[in-house]
Amino acid sequence: MPYQAFQALAEAVGRVVDLNVAYTRLRMIKSPEELEWLRRAAELTDLSCAALRDSAAPGHTEHDLAAMVEGSYLPLGGSNYIHYFSVTPMDRPRQCVPSQWPSSRTLAVGDVLSCELSTSWGVDYPGQLLRTFTVGAEATLLYQELHDVASAAFERIQAVLAPGATSADIVQAADVIEDAGFTTVDDLVHGLGGGYLPPVFGSRSRTLEPLPDVTFAAGMTVVVQPNVTTADGRAGVQTGELLHVTSTGCERLHTFAHGLGRIA
Figure 1 (spheres, one colour):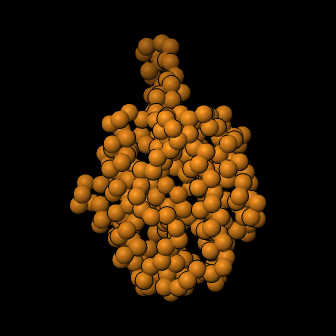
Figure 2 (cartoon, helix red, strand yellow):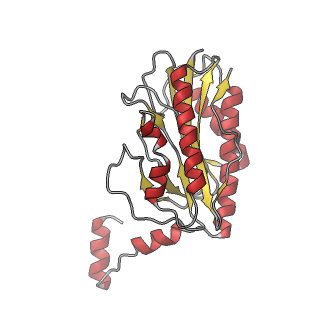
Figure 3 (cartoon, one colour):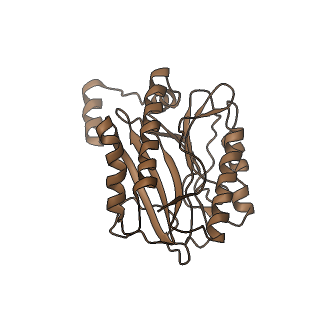
């Protein structure tokens, strides 16, 4: 609540106890009911990415892409959490990460389209899917390498994401990014489901603050998103999705195929 409201509450009742830390800790471990909501949200998010893959074509604007995405789930009761897009020519890249606001830029043959999609089921229970597609052309060597590195990082993180794993373990698993001469421009991992939750941290070359001292536990749901980019920030790819930490490892909540896709 705003400070003025807090001050009024304190004046009325005396000492006010801060429950933020305890509440956040509670939200990080999902109940069976919450997991069912997230599974449905992931299903709807997958539908939105399939609609994008199957309907997008040269000449469409980012506004058109947003309409395709939302049209897939609105009739089914889903609601928009986010849909971000990046459209840039593969031979002259000038954007490495999706924009938070769609523009009138149009798709053209030879472009690369990256997206970050989240559809909610209920209040604040979204899936999250990140994928990259080439438009009417094979991937250039640069984009193929970027995506290969991103896929390797995702697979390595997925292999170690289990109860007892730490944030440091995840960052180490993603070292393949920096070893290949690339970097990232967004969070590598963040909690999601019932809020944007801890842990939130980047890869080795994008550590904006001290690495959180978090040990993963069964019931947590986190987005793993190795958004691999060139050091100059001109080219990048998106891959990743929401995962559920189980008692023995981690579970995919999404079913949309991995890999560098192609449209039109």
